[in-house]
Amino acid sequence: MHPALDSVFERRHREAVLTSPLCAGKLCHVGRVPMEERVVGDLLFLNQAFDPTTWDAREIRRMVDELDRFQPEVIEADPAYLSILARACVLEGLRLRQPECIVLTYEFPSRVHLRQIAPAFPGVPVVSSYGSTETGHVFTRCDAGVFHENTATCHVEIQPLRAASGDVRIGRILVTTLDNPWFTLVRFDVGDLARLHDGLPCSCGRHDGLAVAAIEGRIRDLTFDLEGRAVTVRRLDDALGAAEHLLGYQVDQCGAREYLARYTAEPHADEATGEAVGDILRSVYGPGARITVRREAALSPEQSGKFRLARTTFDWDPQELFS
Ligand SMILES: [Zn+2]
Image 1 (cartoon, rainbow, N blue to C red):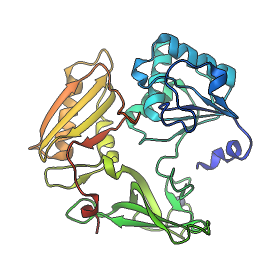
Image 2 (cartoon, rainbow, N blue to C red; image 1 turned 90 degrees about the vertical axis):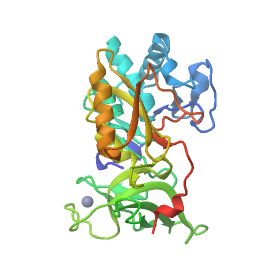
Image 3 (cartoon, rainbow, N blue to C red; image 1 turned 120 degrees about the horizontal axis):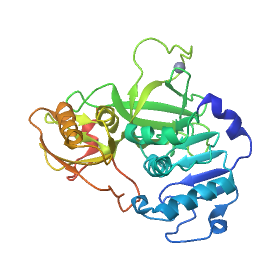
Image 4 (tube, helix red, strand yellow; image 1 turned 180 degrees about the vertical axis):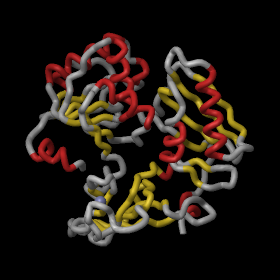
């Protein structure tokens, strides 16, 4: 976690959770439920709709009012869900309760989501706990932005991609926990990819344990370029983050050379946004990629309630990617 936020998490605090109602732990509901029934201890579960793109003005107003009443110190959110709420409030001139911090979790925080969230929460620190949900505090992020392995509680290995499969500095995160006597020496695959921090010891001074420059996204969300090399969600997102007026996207790889990119954009965006998406995807996947770009009024989540930024429509074996 971020050092500046330790004070919030060390004391008792209220937290508002904004994610799919299917993900929110014990509380599983779709449909209208009074606020009191969505409060469990210090947690408020804000969302009641399966698909947040169906939130109307009344739902937005309800969430704004509930945040004002509950006064959470922390908002924990799926970045896609929070971006929809934040943008709606900015457009309507509604002021959202400002928490001490925002924790993004559940899914990869896309640049297009972050730039919609920021204007609704000026000055509020936004941190990502992405990549560490299954393993607790595997990494601590230092002031230089590097993720350091917590050597006291776990042992982390990065199993690299094969040279033929992609960038060998990227690999899957394998964790052995050391602090739980029942799980000692159980090594598990958390399903996420990381990029090793290369070069000299980090500028923060830490030199023990593994250092990771970035969490690259889930293995299951990989797509592949024309040479069959893995493209991580982070790489795709860094590239698409340059497209102006883009609000959301989902890239489906439908075959070795076929890609379908669906996107949503600001109402005033013209066809230049779609052309930019196509150009960016050709630069990522290869000039010969057959890319279909389609603008949508809205992009809905999957059955799981998650918005996946990238996926393949065919099966492949993750084991074959790693050395
Ligand atoms: Zn460091």
